[in-house]
Length: 209
Image 1 (cartoon, rainbow, N blue to C red):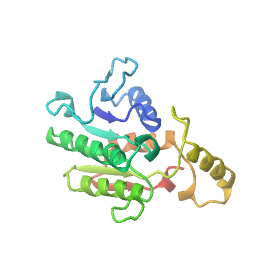
Image 2: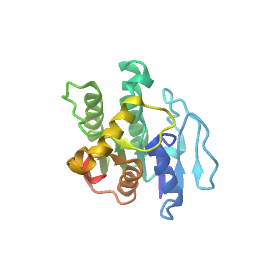
Image 3: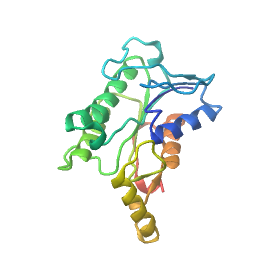
Image 4: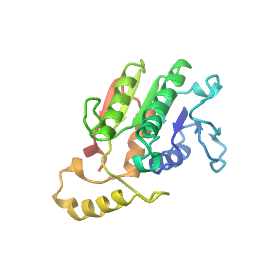
């Protein structure tokens, strides 16, 4: 199968990319990115501007898209910038892929995604999910992790403190509040692309422990 992977340089995306390139069912991966990726015979990593994606690129036609794009308010610097990365870019990718006939879209979303939420982060995630439901994908999978465990390139103090706390409390916590390892999230994303369920499917955080 041919797979488009957005967000291949992030924590979860890196694990998806490694798994996809090692899986014999994946014949080719297109990973549009802002910075170069290591070369691989089955990888095409076009350098793109996500504010001006190449609408007519032939690589938009694929068997599935996995979107693992995401940032934080601190990194983005403003609400508008955060919305652009976590809502506008994933939706633009969905629209271009769908226009070229790609039937499957898999999103790394977030626990608590709700278009009606008073929490800005959750509302943006929920608004994206709601928009994706209207795009007509034969299969749409929304993976909703809680706190993601793993080694990031950037240090996030709040997440580091929360991770230490949740690890201490791990035996006492309900499954949905436990840390979700990046590897498990990547597995769920790739599984949904390789064996896509019909319609809309949600993978909750308690399935990612």
